[in-house]
Length: 237
Image 1 (cartoon, one colour):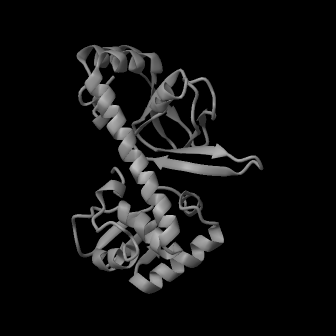
Image 2 (tube, one colour):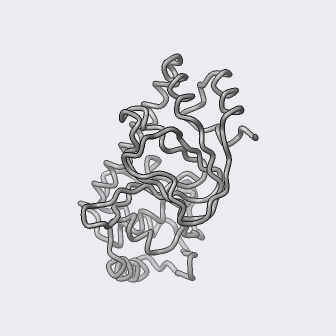
């Protein structure tokens, strides 16, 4: 198997023994949209790397509705935190866009973490950055209005170091975008219309076009405690 999907930050200081074990035991499989990979509090035997596609992490509330934890693109790993939760999955995972997911026995990672202090520290640093991102999103829900939150989401899908015109492709349908931002679909539609009015963005299906990235950032980031560009929240491409 091509090992390039494993060249992600938490594994940069992994040992050759670890990568050899990945080579021998990792399993790559294509999944259709809607495939449930595991359920909250399942016994975790694997962790995963997204090679292509998108995966939704969520929990179900008592009334059966879903609370979305995150939506991850290619290049991300997930399920590894089960190492720190008594090998129980802290959320459910569903494929939301067809793709290739690599599964690796969790015991391989556990063995490496126990023998490689640097990798353990790298994983803790990665988890801390992710927690910081979640804290920032909680802040956004408190201080930003709905159009600004949509604008912030769009900014995460751009190259924030460039100015001028930009074309943004939504990675999944608008209903999921709304859920990811903690909005009802009707609220999302109204907020998107307001964002168009304030920033001049143009929406054509799943494509968003804008003449000036600065105009979007100035409006969306006006109430945020961080300055643009915000590296903590920029989505992985």
